[in-house]
Image 1 (cartoon, rainbow, N blue to C red):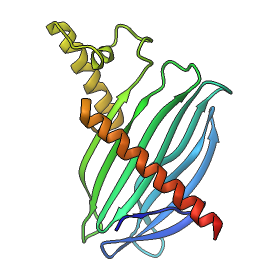
Image 2: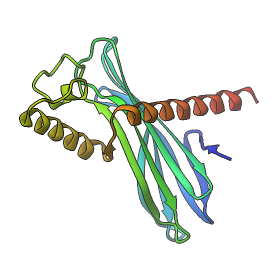
Image 3: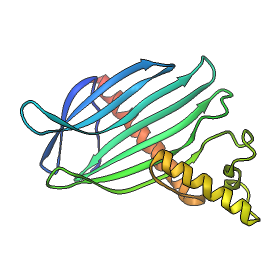
Length: 196
């Protein structure tokens, strides 16, 4: 059974594989970006907490009509913790990401997070925005060694920036569907909690 984990603003705790983690959900509104993050901490003593990592639940950046959007969700399933991210664009913004990422961890008995996988598919620009980018070879087969090299450079850059392994074709479609389903489960959980 999969449990979608949602917390209201502020501190909560989460137990995975007999380890209790402190979780802080916060909102921000600065430098043209507005959103929410969740940060996981491991309690080391009564007074200290070790920061494990932060994750974006929501981010909206840009003006009134042209926005870059990031939506995230996380789920606990047994000893596994999975993070889902979807990037979208609204309006005519050209240089904002579009795509998704799924990162899977196993929480070990000692409380450490062991990364199982991180897969992503990201288009960094609109398809017709940067004709010199190797991104265009996601949509057309590279015919020369130079074109293959441009695509490889684009993929390596995206993998480094978004921290994951790039997937193509059917695997990318499956990945985006998985992320969208996780975000729908999150929304159903939110609406279910509001009705109570």
